[in-house]
Length: 79
Image: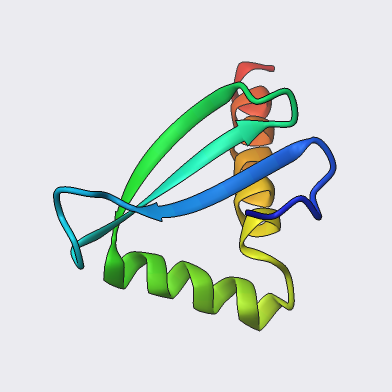
């Protein structure tokens, strides 16, 4: 869990039916509302962790940045 990002909590939990295969990332708002669940193959998740580490940011911040980038891209296309 990473509370370093204001208003956002992220969790990365292994999926109980597929040990060793995937990681589920859950985006939870500060009020406890679950926004999204995304299942990543372990190798993809490892690359995401590595990228966050290279940038010197937390995994939570990495996901928040990615979400913000996606929202900004959608807004630019809609304009």
